[in-house]
Structure formats: C-alpha cells, structure tokens
Amino acid sequence: MATALYGPGGFYRSAGPGPAAHFRTSVHASPLYARAVAHLLTEVDTVLGTPPALDFVDIGAGRGELLTGVLAALPPATAARVRPYGVERAPRPEGLDARIGWGEEIPGHGLTGLLFANEWLDNVPVDVVETDAEGVARIVLVAPDGSERLGEPVSGADAEWLARWWPLGDGAACSGTGAGAGAEAGGGVGSGRAGAGLRGAAGRRVEPGAVPGRGCGLSRGGGRARVAG
Ligand SMILES: C[S@@+](CC[C@H](N)C(=O)[O-])C[C@H]1O[C@@H](n2cnc3c(N)ncnc32)[C@H](O)[C@@H]1O
Image (cartoon, rainbow, N blue to C red):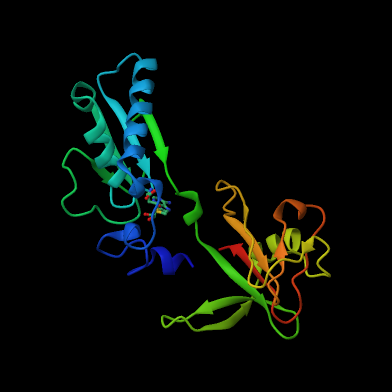
C-alpha cells in the first residue's frame, strides 16, 4: 500500500494536478475555506503578539492549494510577515508561489504560528489482509492492472496487531449491514497504526468501537482486514 501511494510513480507522488484531480476536499471546494483558515491565522498572530515572522505550515499540502489560498486571503501586512511552508511527500509543484517553502519534513527551525493539516491522516497507508480457504490471514497483493492475489501469511508486528484487534473467531462484535459495507477504526500515528477495518465475505460491517476487548472474527474463506503496514 505504501508503495502504491508513495513509491515511484505512486498515486500521491505522480506529476500533475495531484489529489484535486481525483477527489475534492474542503480546500478545493470553495475559497471560503482558505479565507476561514486565513482568519484563524490572523487570530493566532494576534495571540502571539504579531511576531516578525509568522509561520503557516500545511502538512500534507497536496499541490499547495491551501497555502496559495491563505496567502491570497490574508491582509497584505500579515501576508508580508508570513512564512508559508508545505510539508509534502510529493515534489514541489511547478509554478508554486516563490514565497512558499516546500519539503518532506517540518522545518527544523522553531515555529511561531500555525501548524495545520487538512485530510492528512486518512492517507496513512495500511495493508489489506484476507483469509484464505484454510482461514490463514494473508496480505492481499495488487498488480498494476488492479487484479488481486493473496501473498504471504501475515507475520511479525502485523500478526500481533491482528491477533489483538481482529482475532480469528466467530465475529462476536460484528453486526449485519448491507453487502459491501466496510469499516475503519482510527489508530495512533505515533504507534504506526493507521487504521483498521474488516469486511466479511458477505459484506458484514464491523463496529470498530465495539472491538477492543471483544474481538471480531475474520470469517473463514474471505474475511478482509486492513492492518498497518
Ligand atoms: C488527501 S490529500 C489532502 C491534500 C490537501 N491537504 C487537501 O486537503 O486537499 C493528503 C496529502 O497528504 C500527503 N501526505 C501523506 N502522508 C504524508 C507525510 N507523511 N508527509 C507529508 N505529506 C504526506 C499526501 O501526499 C497527499 O498529498
């Protein structure tokens, strides 16, 4: 999954208009959003006592759309003091305003201002796991043409995670919903656990909140789960 999203030619790193060409976030939906964030930034500025350099860092900045919009929406006197910076795994977009810094890491100098992120955490890659006919949980491998096959059994930290959060069993915490439904449960970025979901062969929905301590079984022969990679 990490390779598909962030490897060479990966979805988020490929050249061109980037995420905005595939889905809309509030950043792309309306200039009102950038205006609201600019307003927030001016409030932070005031609280900080209008420092000589006001940092505005956007993590997971896409193609810099929000940074560009906020710069345009700020009062000129504030814009003149702002140090806008995009933290992104994709390369710097062509034609980006020269005032905007760009890199893969949060700038090392101390920050005075606003650290912002919009729809970043839902892009932390996870692997998908499916049980085979014998009930062994295996990583799902996806070919460039989209076809899937089962790979190696889940092992190591992923196996421990799966045993803890989605133990193979009779599915006590699962409830029935429409076919094809899936579920996701957030995990901590710090722990490296990005999220988890489980879909039974018949599309059973898992209620993530009910899982800790209860367990929800992967159904034999077709249960699917997403585990952190
Ligand atoms: C769904 S897009 C959101 C883009 C933009 N923030 C928006 O709201 O339209 C998520 C972005 O986060 C970036 N991203 C994911 N993980 C990242 C990381 N560890 N460091 C920097 N950027 C990351 C992706 O490359 C992608 O551009």
